[in-house]
Image (cartoon, rainbow, N blue to C red; front, side, top):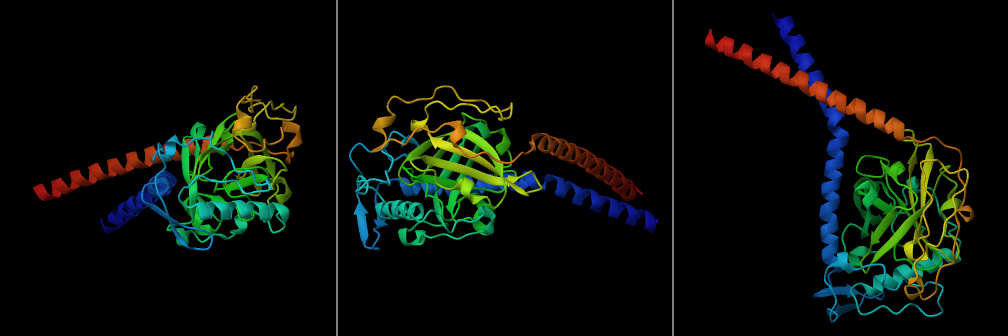
Length: 360
């Protein structure tokens, strides 16, 4: 009798452990989404110009009153605002807004790394650090904004510095790549883990999809123009492309193997002209139609040069992980359902036995 009870107890424990293991990725995704939503809500509060205080680059305190007719809702900020031109002889003049000192520091940083040809750039997962003191501006967690990819139903906080802690929490801006403020001669490389809640579904992203960056000052829209895979330390392919305003999404590949890097090039949407599709592109990728913006010249002090699909780097041969991901999800969900069913049956049987003993 005792042996039977021990066997039943062990079986129940194994079922519980198995259920926890199977459901953990979905629970982690839920937690990550909730944490990101909370951080993003707090960040949106920072962007409201009412009663906001900031520090200039010399750490002297300034007060920035709300501008006339200016919306306090950052979601209404859009990419029609002037993008900074980091090649201009004089620094772009920003209207009186919060955190202007930080804005100009980021512009200067972008100029500096471009002039130095990003000589210190390393692989994202070398866990580099943050070069800015956000705490001096009253901003917590080194958050510079958030990234939204509607086609993936993804919204993630954007942290400066691809260290382990930041990578665990959300998307990160790689050290020695451009800060997410836009402008000529910039390429902000955004790295995140290949996991649920992160860039796990990145292979569902297609050419022509939109990626949005909300920073402390405006919303910047970018369009996916090319997707490749590279070796982890082939950093030349994620450096700044002259006369371009870009972001590049970066994560591990293949899924759960992580020996390569999946790279998604995105160009500022005002700069989209016509992108040609190379014959080597996967059939799942779609070449965008003519997305030219007749008002683009109004949104840049200097318009970025047109760039074609063929002018962006080519990667190494690779296979899609999409089928592996679908298979894993199917197995995991099936396991959750079956394990949950067995647990329910076990619980019902235990309750029946308990009632019988009580009745006796």
